[in-house]
Image (cartoon, rainbow, N blue to C red; front, top):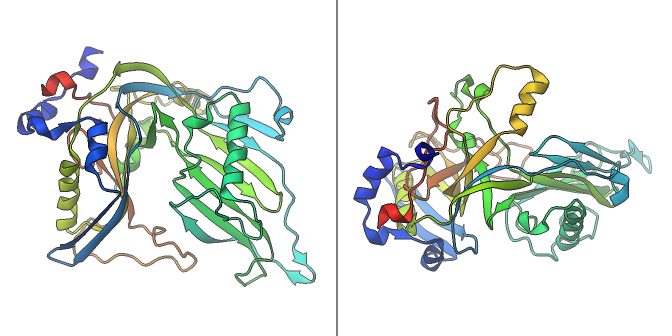
Length: 384
């Protein structure tokens, strides 16, 4: 354990370069940040206009914790809480489902097409908003149903960020070959889990792996942190919930120092001036999962291999997430949106850049053997 939580040599070098005023509590940082960051940059290649929302949790401390999956198989039948089935996928996932009627092939002699996506939302989720095609249910009414179900399952609804989803998107049902609403459609919502009031935004492998990544990921533990819910207008109710609860195994430090927000902005500016970042949507503070050092998946088959995932434990490291359009080469043009999408984030150039909140380092793609391993933290004692 001592080896695990020791500060690495790279961190020590960074400590010597950082002055005392560079270190802050998360409460200090909340006072530093604006609601939005607006600025224009003239780079060698192009003008970049920044107008980005900044999100930071309302907590006073950032503890160092180790976590594991918190899902348990319900001790009752799904029908007892108004659902048709449960699927317990182990400690990191529980799925609930309701059966819903199939759409007819024709309606009043009109042939219906398959569902099509139109409408993606990433913020501004007011309770009174309506998103479901041909259904007047509000976002607040949907989230109330989700919270009620989470509570009936024995979990804390406040541990899930259903009111502030990562993404919401709508599916429409129209005539064949047309984009018009004929029958109620459905929406899907992705949302995060919170640990100690801080959102768990991703596993680091989502960032370090890339188009040229090797098969190293086959031996790595990796967990998708997104919970999800679908509301089906044709059913008139929630049709599925995918729940990803987490629980703390141990708290290693009650609070740790963070670099000032100006330091994080400087790291982002380096990416802008290098020609990589072309647009920023949001900047968000949260935890990222890192694997236990030295622990890799074995080559055991099927069921035994899945069991290893269920017993995996992860360390949470504080990061800044920059949702942006990003290119590896400064002179490359952004790719166009797909013809069937109205969402500019739905391109291969949409990227979620991670910046370490304690070192200011940008997390890069990597094929290193230890790319997903936890490497310790900097304590308040280290910076005094």
